[in-house]
Image 1 (cartoon, rainbow, N blue to C red):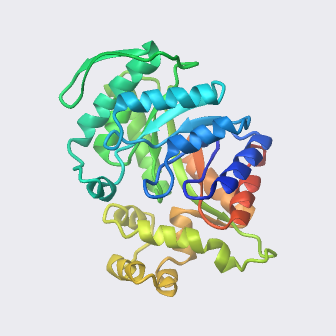
Image 2: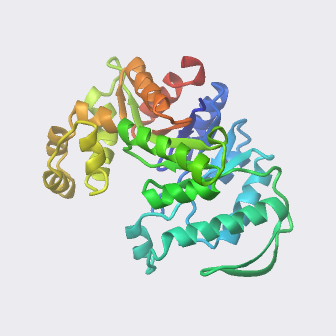
Length: 333
């Protein structure tokens, strides 16, 4: 089991403290992510490298809808240089449809685009050059003047069946997003391993399953109330569980809820209404909240279901983020 830390929205001072603590506690890596209106993962990864923190970096989640794959390769090569060769993976994603649409683009042919993105990235990472003619991208005599320190793994972020199949066919791993339940993870890893072996003649032991886990380790002696410690994770979960594709996953795990009522609560920013719907049972079906041992047990459930690398998704007060990193250190498992 690997374990990683991630913070997508925190200020630089908080991200640096988390990374320094994670390095001190022998975490495997810091995985960066991208919220296009808050932080981009490549800049965060560059900062981690420039700060000189002794922790490996997985760069995520640039999208070929907002960056050309060749430029993604160039930028990640720069991060690898600035970090002294500490880039240990690159994870790409389509980005959310509403984000792409805000930029005046359409989320057209996502499977084909991610497949061609893989081919271009793989060529540049391994050889420093690319000649490619696809349905979407055409590149002639592209040469990268610098070199990657190693042949870094490529991960695909997504959860739909076609995206999972593409990951099994071409990528080195699959990064599942927020609020994936244990039964869903169990299905995904079982089906994925079967695809790897029977369809693509690949070794499942060489394929990595990662998962974002919104987390809040609670300390009842903290100056913040328990409600204040979990509020950010609860609000984030409420927002994400408004999606039609998330509701069946949650219900299959034994939680029934009125998605229209939840959408209204989120739309009105009505925290009390959100809290009534997303109670502690609901929250602990799609996140990890509670005492250190309770949260560690939740992580163990995901690992038992097939996750190779749980990613602590830190979202909330700084004291909670740092407590998450302390409580979930590799030595605690």
